[in-house]
Image 1 (cartoon, rainbow, N blue to C red):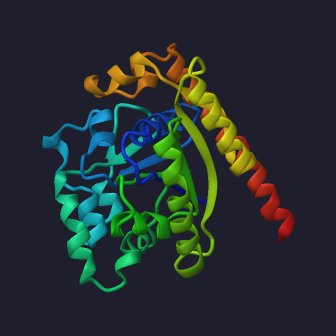
Image 2: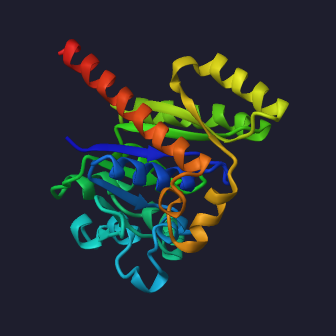
Image 3: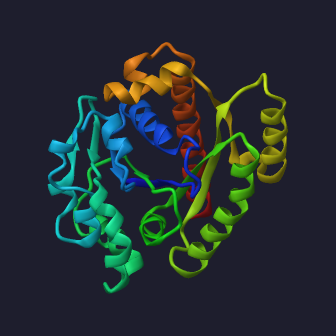
Length: 264
């Protein structure tokens, strides 16, 4: 069964797209078939996977509006086992267009359900907002993955995001759960990082991944070369952290499957 995971944070600059690209790459590297849907109008995930603007003929805008299917939109990347549905600035108009469409909160889910999706994981890189595009990602997914930057304002926005997720769970997608929170831009030399980590782990407990993603220059350089950090420099601290995060995610997935089987 395909697992659909939305990577969400309404605050920009928290490492959301970096997490989406490198987590997708790490899962592909350990043999999983992965599709990354770029739902951010900035298209940074597409750029980070080497999909130049001239190659973005069919995009996530087309599948969201319903004019194209997933098989038509998906593109193979240079990374084995990893495909992407790219994004362009056209997606920024989708918020307005969706308002007048029927089942506007479920357009992406309907598109994904209308065809056979032969992937182990579909990761959705959401825009830095909680508008209709992000709601479509949440109604499509089984789980939410939250990158959280180690700073005060990011922590302040977390409570608002959690309220939105609960609202979607109650009214639109009762099977949605929170897979976990990963702390990004982690700097163990910074006292604020330590305080933020204590607060988040105290508030969310086991939902917070043990793996943290450090600030890393090599990881920041990678997108300008159209490559995930794992391909640009697999030995850097950031790349190694994402490999560890993928392993921890898979461990959680195994534990989740066991609980579901026991419940059945």
